Amino acid sequence: QVQLEESGGGLVQDGGSLQLSCFLSGRFFTNYAMAWFRQAPGMRREFVAAISRGGGGGGNAEYSDSVKGRFTISRDNADRMVYLQMNNLKLEDTAVYYCAAGGAFSSVARDYTFWGRGTQVTVSS
Image (cartoon, rainbow, N blue to C red; front, top):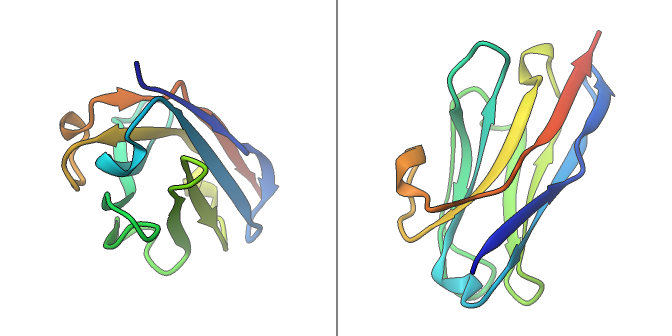
């Protein structure tokens, strides 16, 4: 059984940085593409970033246009962790951030099978 647990959320000022972490409990971490999605109040869940599966810390990464150049996704296969480094945070980045795992490297939420419970990120002015 695969479970995902996010951590690292919190309150940060506009322009600040945070790093989110996600731990996958279960086997075959390298078989999964990993992604981050977010959902702001009253909004639909939206894609943030994804990293392909495989060894060597993963290969390809993909980002939404709204975070490209500010956020970086990475993975540590030995520790079964995926990270989201968020720099130059903006008010509009405020949301609950979810970690997801699935078989396909994708920006589409339905392609991901396993989800964490989310961690709140709040950016203040």
